[in-house]
Image (cartoon, rainbow, N blue to C red; front, side, top):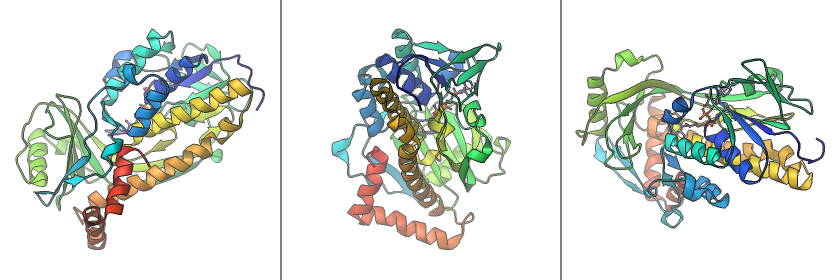
Length: 388
Ligand SMILES: Cc1cc2nc3c(=O)[nH]c(=O)nc-3n(C[C@H](O)[C@H](O)[C@H](O)COP(=O)(O)OP(=O)(O)OC[C@H]3O[C@@H](n4cnc5c(N)ncnc54)[C@H](O)[C@@H]3O)c2cc1C
């Protein structure tokens, strides 16, 4: 890598949380960047997914002077609302003193990041599909739909798991570590206010959950076989199955506005850097939504990558950029370990038909340890809070 003299912009492909956070972090440091997003602004601002900014991510926004303008929402409650075999088993978490996480639906965060980026004079191009080229040379670039080319110093691939950034790297240079969990979630978005932050049901019929998504909406999740289709899940079946797994009537029902099937999987792309292309967020790793960490890992990537670029331009020293992949992969695997354990535990402790009675009993024992052992509780609490 050559000197740190600033000349061409950082090309950011994708205006999800990773790309928008990175754009804002760089803009505040006076580092030129352009964000390319293939969808319209309306599409991007309405996409409903995650709901919690963890402690570490909240601290990143504070460190960058963006907390007040970007992070909204109530503090995360230090408890998990489990129901086991239809009975309430709430679990108190033991990290109340570090409660800096915020309930902030992903689309609210995205909207705020777009507003701040534009207010501060950022260059954000919606409706612009970009493809990445020249990552091994000194002048990587993106080619736009109209055939024009924009050159930059580096490309930040923030365009998700099926994006052009990852596709621009020859397969022979990538190792894809992939894990399929063997079941799916029926993911339902409904106009139902949540009475509690989270309710998670462990039941022999399968896992179910309700996560609040702002004051008027909830996400409901139902574990189901991989080959189920949404047609097999009419609204009445969704409500009755949720009530069966929760073991009580729902406090409220409302219009179902979205239904999709999501096979649970984990993936890590190694390495996360290829020449002058660096991958961030879902472009580099997927964690199952049970862990509620996908959005947060994307934000942590943006923080570490922004620091590496700032160091490079201020000191002419590429060492943090060179270390970016190794630095991030350590945390990514740590989160995959947590996500795998939590996902396995709450699913295996319920329906034994996927992975057998032996796993079922082990998962039950593991789950009980969270109530019996302060150490186990603390470990889970630190992950939930985003401190580990
Ligand atoms: C149902 C569901 C529930 C989830 N729940 C949680 C949760 O509770 N907690 C949590 O932390 N995470 C959760 N996640 C995961 C989280 O939403 C993702 O990890 C997060 O969105 C990743 O951000 P990103 O910026 O990497 O990618 P994205 O948000 O996917 O953004 C990528 C952007 O790149 C754009 N793009 C793609 N190709 C191109 C191109 N060629 N040119 C220009 N633009 C392009 C796309 O249009 C998109 O806007 C959930 C995910 C799902 C699906």
